[in-house]
Length: 207
Length: 225
Image (cartoon, rainbow over all chains, first blue to last red; front, side):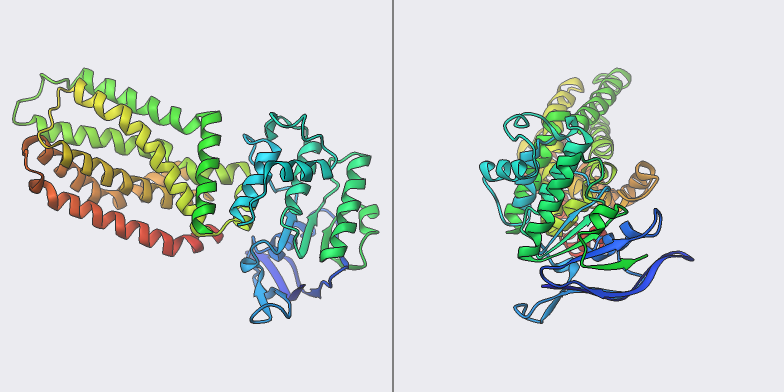
């Protein structure tokens, strides 16, 4: 499945945030989005995942297996994964309860053991976190749970916006492992300022 | 798929509410405060016998209406304020989100009604001649209050003046069913025949049907834009 953006623009009133931008991702490849603070990386990612409507242009997912050959990102339920600084999980649920909930509402329920396995994959101890609500986790631990959420549905396109923020060395390695695993099942869109993370990208869009 | 996802949203909201009790406490605190105030100021004996059914009916629905205004808007406001709405938008079908939130609000309102209504009847010595009609009016009134509150909460959740806008939008929308609920409650207090209040039940049923159908049709645009 490929993500295609065509002449994508976003403005807030008279203030232009980005665009026009045209690019596409390919399976097995990582597309980097680079730019200084305030350059519109997060707005671009939110537009790509369908949380913000573009001012002009369009973005879609295309694949030969789809009946019409393409679908809008808004209809791509479960085909995309997203992790961003402005993503929040339910503070009153434990990490495993969060993953179980999001899997269930997406129509792909997972048992508790599977949720705990996903938590272990991002370097957290699921047994220790069994009774700890997400609100009591450190910022870095929450970031890891957000990464587990992003890859929960084995997405075709994974959007990572500043994935290494608040993470320690082991956390950065977990991000690299997630990106490597995603290459095997789809593509990655990686928005970051971090030169080490940007080095994972095969192509770049500079804002 | 939609029903299972809606059930997941409903269970998640119940679990979150059970762990924080924010909306339930706000609803109950408001309802009991008003109830005590009404009991103290009006009481069962300060009203003329012929005025009791209509005045008590109005007071009962005032308590329920403003309690709903206090707590039910949190259904979506909380999701927006804590930043969880984006993840929910990406993961769940909009219809499932609305249905789950509606069921959550109905459950919350049901708990409040189960506690407040018997207390109000006892405190005001408010006798009911047709309990079946009264229960039907309460049930359909609650569905109307919950469905309108849930939909309006989704509209105002992203705005700055949530509380003020919620009341401004909800009051005119809820006036017709409130008038029917008050009329039906008055009839239930005075007429022992169920048939006497059927018009009020029909009006409430129609409002609930229209409100829920319109909400499902419009919710996708409200939730995603």
